[in-house]
Image 1 (cartoon, rainbow, N blue to C red):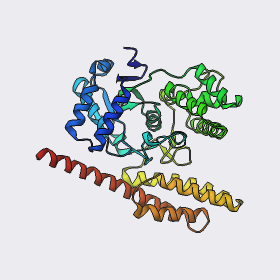
Image 2 (cartoon, rainbow, N blue to C red):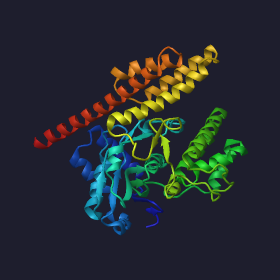
Image 3 (cartoon, one colour):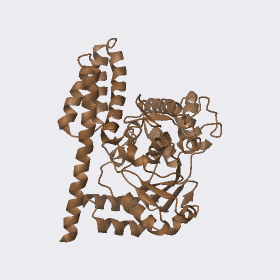
Length: 394
């Protein structure tokens, strides 16, 4: 059983490659309901999740959101678990900010553009008191998605008790030897504190991936990875997920979202929309309600980023100014969504950085774009449901 259960992670199979191949075949067919259910049952062994029986009547399955909005495997998996162990299922409680699936990102892009989500406040507000929260995913590799989602939940005072998946190749956590190897490959002993803080409590596969990038990479890659650890360490510290004085070893007072969630005061606020930047979601009675409010939160975040770009504009050289505009464009594009509102938003963002448009205009355009994106996603889901229903009738 240890092969399939380790602390909060539990999985049904280690046939990760086979599951990924099967999932891509389903994706090519738009995840037909019957075939997806058959696929899940092929890899599902309910006995691997027998520990859920201890929480009978108290389980809430939180389905990990799909980046494309099309993948229904986690939802089907949750329904199969519900049949055996009972509980409630909550879908669409968070929305991905990234528009590109992690599986399609290669090399350093997986570090530069990790999974990012926004919470759906009303959905989280409907979770009952005393529920045991279980994240449900199809495949867990580095654990980056579940970690990002845990941060969102911790910001709302919600604690994940377990992460379950159809497939997971590695359940072990990072250890001191992993930290030592990465610091050695970074060729920067001063990075140990940040590396320890970032990787503490993470799955070993996350460390393996970074170590592989460093082994196969150049001096430029080393610099990028150093910058990643430095930035991620600062972000975790701002969330209360890492102590300012991280010890040399893992056991020296550093904790990730898994541990921090167990503290009642953990993560009172977290970055919303685009992490590692200024916007915040807060707990309490003033939490946003509905798609429009979620959009406003993301708008505040994007404006905060662009205010910092604007501060750098006046003193920047012509070359640096081109870089600032490129950075602005990349931030806006990461929101995804329809070009009808996305193109004007990119223009307004660049003009704001140059001092040619107002903060209010940028806020309004960002909020409008987010609302349009949410409506388009809902329309696409409706079309998919209609198409599947028509297929069943035939």
